[in-house]
Length: 151
Ligand SMILES: [Fe+2]
Image 1 (spheres, rainbow, N blue to C red):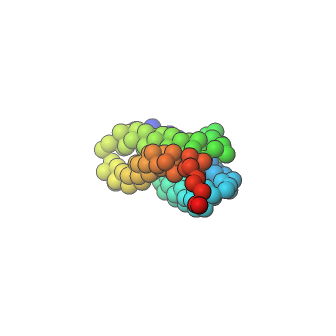
Image 2 (cartoon, rainbow, N blue to C red; image 1 turned 120 degrees about the vertical axis):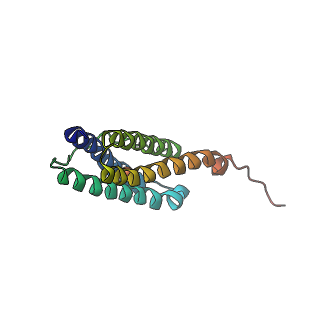
Image 3 (cartoon, rainbow, N blue to C red; image 1 turned 90 degrees about the vertical axis):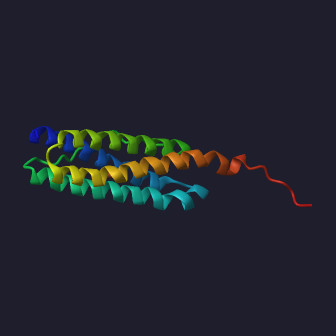
């Protein structure tokens, strides 16, 4: 295993997790109207998941002798809930890619492979969840439901 290559890739993962902390937190803060009831807690919970992963990855980078990054990438922002859900799916898909690449670099270190697989599994669950949410949203949008008067 090329330790420096692993540390570098884990730092890319860490920057992505810091991005998730900010992006999901803001999405939770600003969601308004009826969607607030549906999504505010979910976005804040996803921010906490990103922080949880950041903690795991930051500790691992330090254990390997590296310096955990304090940087993050660009945060995607929108007040359009469907756009926020798409940003979230994109975010989770990128996380799957990044941890998959870290796994390739860790190939002969079984403990590190297991560590990364646990996180990767949760990132894939995020992809699955946002894929399903985006599939469901059009049918549940209030503005697409025709109202009928009761006579
Ligand atoms: Fe994550």
